[in-house]
Amino acid sequence: MRHTIPTARTGRITVAHSLLATTRFLFRFRSVKRTIRRLNNGSRVLIRGWHMGGVFLPLLLVALAGCGSLRRPGENAEASWYPEQLLTLEERQQEAVIKLTRVQEFLRRESLSGVLIGTVRNFAWVTAGGDNHIVIASEKGAVLLFIRDDGQKFVIASYSDAARVMNEDLRGMGYQLREIAWYGDRAEPGQMTATLQELTGGRPFASDTRYPGSHMVDDELATLRVPLTETEIRKYRWLGRRCAEAVDSVCRKIRPGMTERGVEALVCDALMRHAIRPAVLLIAADERILNYRHAPPSDTKKIEKYAMVNICASRWGLVIAMTRSVHFGPMPEDLEKKLHAAARVNAGFWARTVPGAGAGAILQGAIEDYAAAGYPGEWERHHQGGAIGYQERDWVAVPGATQKVQANQAFAWNPAIQAVKVEDTILLAGDQLEILSEIRGWPVVESKALGRIYRSPGILVR
View 1 (cartoon, one colour):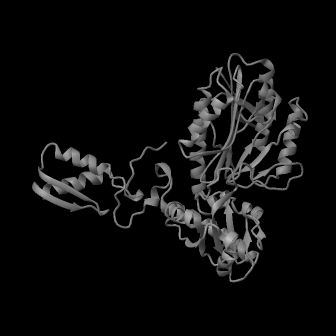
View 2: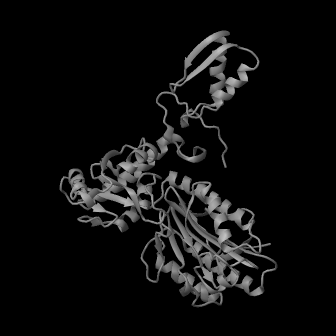
View 3: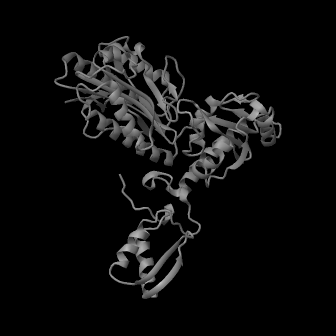
């Protein structure tokens, strides 16, 4: 993790800059009775009857160092939109240009005037990390985008959301605002229609939300989200590390006697402190792990010997999926056997995830691995995962599936055998696999597949 002091590039004043400015100030005003000086952001510092002495210098330094909102002319607050200087505003803009180019090329191929984007996932993708959600559980956001084939970009929003999204999510991103009443077509028929007529010029258009009169293109937009850009990969690595840290910290806090609901609260807290929003959160213990493949936390079940934490969590639209389990006391032999079998299947999934591989062929290899490990038929009791990115799964591998693996694409395979699940998010960076959700210091199970050794997450025994 990089610990950095915000710099002028992120729209803030550095400590070094503060020291230089203070030194010049002191030399210029050695004895001040009353001085009003304008700082760059227009605020005023009032100094009364002070002589430049021992106490004034440190006080002024502290004041200047704390002025995180001060900006030089021309600097942008949006540049610090990402944590730890993960991306600059310029890098975010460049990522958005790549997405815009893909969309424009698609629109021209299909002879469409533009596309109306309303889903949270596509909004986040095309804006390089923006967020249009209000209702957490809804796939549709409160703000729409319209992107034209000529490259012009528009925000369609009600007064409730327009100022916020333009000032916070899309400032500096080149969007034009078209504001509509919150009651829209419900009370004034034709308001949205008139806006779209203006933007399309009456030509055919598409949408990702089945908007009346549009061509539905959600599946087509999903194909445009691959491959990941360099800045998306940078964000994905950050997200993977934070999710891994959150799950690791919770798994090491779990104690017998805690309720599943209590563990859920710990996971939510650990994630949302980093603005990471859980989309899937399954917590199960003991017999509930044995009996159910999908187990949301119960209110009353208390952990005795065994607990499983499964998350899909997102920020900037990107999603990390991972599962970890904790066992108190020695692991039963049967559980350990299932773990090694699931890890063997997982190794096969990873080994077959190479550019150009077909989803159906990858799944067929896993089916054979289940049988070879002594658990035929287990693959039918739970989906086995697939590609991941701006959805919990962009696609799930099914028998005969034709989707192809691409370089710079993420995957989350999740082989499962009763009471055991192995799941991590991996990135196919070029032709090399990288585990985005790896927890350092977590026990691993080594398995060989197609001539290589792979390290799958094991069960933490405490």
